[in-house]
Image 1 (cartoon, rainbow, N blue to C red):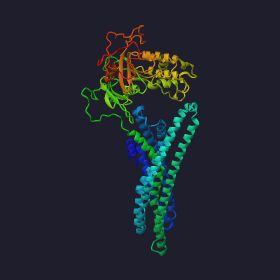
Image 2 (cartoon, helix red, strand yellow):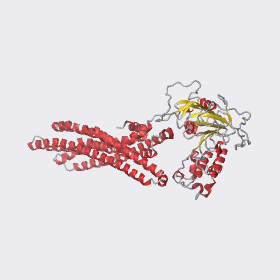
Image 3 (cartoon, rainbow, N blue to C red):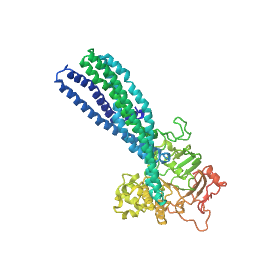
Image 4 (cartoon, rainbow, N blue to C red):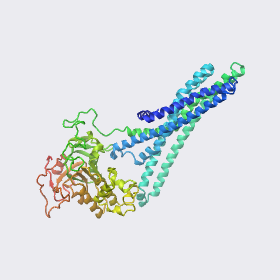
Length: 634
């Protein structure tokens, strides 16, 4: 029995109940075979009157009822186990986050959660009940045979172990072949989904026909793996049937000879001939159902491999905490209202601090971020600039909790992010991705994604604030169902829907944007920049940007190069009443900080920029900036 599935079934109360009824019904139906054989042998030999046939019919009817009960409850068991496993799998995928799932193609995960886990039906409805029957019925049959005819019972006792032995020998090959078949199926599903998603690009570059050939090759590989699995399964059935048939022949031939010689009475001979096959049948059925269930077992192994995948928290559970780190029970949890003001208001913006943070992705030699120390003050707007692949998005993923640092820590108002409730922390975040994902549902449901209880008026206000005026021109307005990934919207329209999502979370105190104006035309960019300016008011904002219009919204511009901060420059802080940045006077190159504005802390990366920077990297992105003093603190 699969130990992980067994543990899952024990943890689910309804599954335990359904599985118990299934096992009991299967075992009782198997034990009634002894009663059925006893009555039939007695009637055929004349030991019992023909009136016993009514009792025999009742026994057959009870067995049929038990078989029906077993099927119904086995179906409930399979449904419950698959639902629980899918729920845990999706929960685990959400916990791992996108950064830790790069080793899995999305199509493979879809195949695993769908078609793959459906293969557990044969295991749960067939193989598990057959285990219970095989453990009880052959023993009961042997006991009755020993009481009826010692010689026949000894033959059955000697030959009976041959079936599980040969079944195990063939089963080891079956498991390996079936695992290869499931890998081929996952590869086919993953590649096919990738091709469908990239079909416009493939057609534009004239590679659609080539990919059709590739899919045909992968499908042929899956077909070959499936046929190989079927050949092994048929071979297994042949071996088990041959072994059982020869064993029965060893029982039946001596019984016939002894019956003719008069040393064995007819009733006993009939009883032995009727019961002997029932001793082998449960083991044969278990072997057959084992092979039929192997695809589901391979899928379960893959699912539990994802569930058991460790997180990337490098700190052991018993490792000592830094002296200034709060204990989990004392950590300032997101959503606490101990601070002045209502925590649901954006005015309750936190301070975010990175202390000597290093991030390494599995399979990569270099660090995505290396020894980064950075403080982002409450209600401060920070723009992260630099070349692609420098580590800007990794820094956002750290704040989102998608990944954890290999070294160092991320602090939110002094509390280690690893000690906080990530769900509560993310409830305070508004995130706008560079390529926002829109679901195949209505515009309104896409906007209220982060706030499911938002009213239609809230949705309309959020869309208006994000300058998503185009929604009114859609066929059903906010009730218009979008295509997959927003296929019937332009890039700018999708970006404004994503911005409206952020506006629909008025309690968010931290705004995270990952190049929201990339790939947009000038008009769409202006609308997104205007909406972002309104959204960032009163919030801590971290913006990954390349376009000057988006950088102009920031109080600070931090350049990230090869995983290090090479410069940290300060811009004039905008008055709270007007989030629109004031342009620098013509000819001005080094404006001073407004009174009361204090710079944030940066680490050795900024020091490197101040003392010479990185080759080919400028210290500032705009002319009107002043470098922060090294080692300054907010």
